[in-house]
Length: 43
Image (cartoon, rainbow, N blue to C red):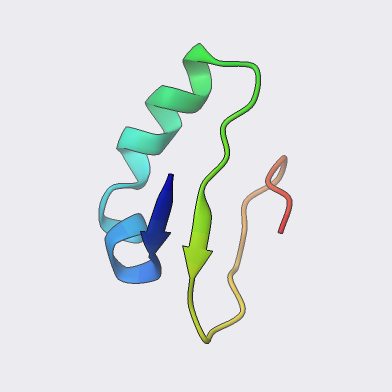
């Protein structure tokens, strides 16, 4: 999945539910900003 940062922040719960059901979830981010990522998330 590819997502822009404002949409990712708004839909973060949706991505958490997907991640809980899979071993690996990959989301490509499009942003000029450095992201403040939660633990277990790799840039």
